[in-house]
Length: 142
Image (cartoon, rainbow, N blue to C red; front, side, top):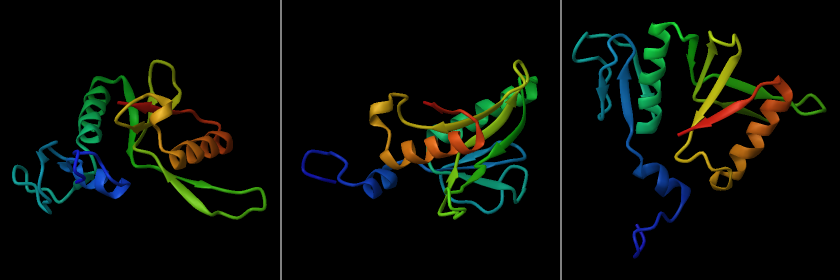
C-alpha cells in the first residue's frame, strides 16, 4: 500500500478484493479456500474472485429458481478470431443466461462501477471484439 492508502497497481487492487468460494449444491459461502463443503460435503465448489461476483451469482440462482432466467453458466469463454483467422485471445465473462421474459441471451460482467470511463482498456477492447464477432451485448453490472 502506498503512503496515502491508494492502490498502486492492478495486482495490488486484485489482492485487496475479498475472494469467495461457494458450494454449487447448497450455496454455502466461504471466505477461505475449501475443497469440500462443510455443510453438505459436496466437492462442487466454485471460486469467485470478488465478493460482488459471488453475491451476483447467488442472486442469479434465486432468479433461476423463480423461473425468471434459465441456462445459467458461470465464466463462459469466447474465442476472439482475427480477420486472418488467428485466435490470439479469449474473453471470459462472469455469467451467461437466457432471460425468460424476452427469450434473449444475456452476458454479464460484474464490475465495481457501471461508469464506462472507469473500465479497463483491455476490458473495453475485448468486450467490443466479442460483441462484434458474436452479435451479443455484454452488460456490466455492479
